[in-house]
Image (cartoon, rainbow, N blue to C red; front, side, top):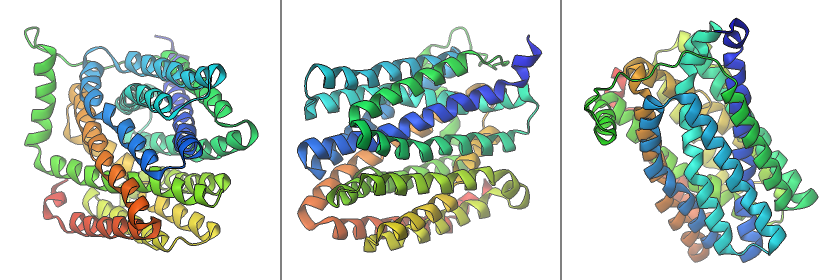
Length: 399
């Protein structure tokens, strides 16, 4: 095996990781902006955000099984190519005819079918790439999530610039190119993938059930996963409905991009700091600090302050939350056999996708019924209650 390619495996994974992060960041700001621009309806924006979450619920467990059987690189590269094609449909649709809400929803949901596969496969590739590059896996976890967050930081800013310079069509064209770059970067990697040693009489469905059995019988890991699910279900409506509605109402695309980029910048710093934090603190207290501090930074946003204050609070929220994703990777890597990690990641991500749709629908309806400020206050109250519950759970002490 080529030694040069071996040593550069982690760097190549991060090119794909960063490119995908940028692409998703652009889409995250462009799609709701396009919906609000064409319909003027927060409820429709919330409905679309919910619909986009649905494919991940069903696709992620299947993808997890494919990762363990077929291979991490193959699944990652194919998903990015398909994501590239799905985003190009927005460009084609806008050139051929003006996109209506139905077409926007259709293309967005189609893209959401492919995205979880790439994200999950790249997570599963971290130990392989780290081993090939001679890197400590905890350090690799922090860097991987840090680079992905850099993509999320740059993506909204690039998306906002594209919207102002050339409209949503330019933003989608840039996104398709980033997905294609991600696919090429992963395919160029040379790593020793560890496939599952499956029983030859075990079918695919039985393999997936085996992944669920691993998660279900590990009580601390299961409770950790459920906590992640609830927190994600409460946060995503803020990110995808409340913030876009607020900044669209004051006609400030740059402000929305700045807030999302500030969150991502905080996450970048927090994620890169994870390696040092993990050496100084065990997982349970570090998890509690992450949950409590990120909630404390998020709560003042309910007052809908000026843009500069909004950006500062967004940065502090991201900074506090930044170590979470590398901590999540480390927990799975420590508690789940390598050959089964794809299935466990897939099941976890499926649960994460399952929570937001109801919240997004209710938040969109709430904004139109009782207003943005009242709805935001209710969501933040539930978020604080959930954070306090997670911080007090004794079972997480066994992580």
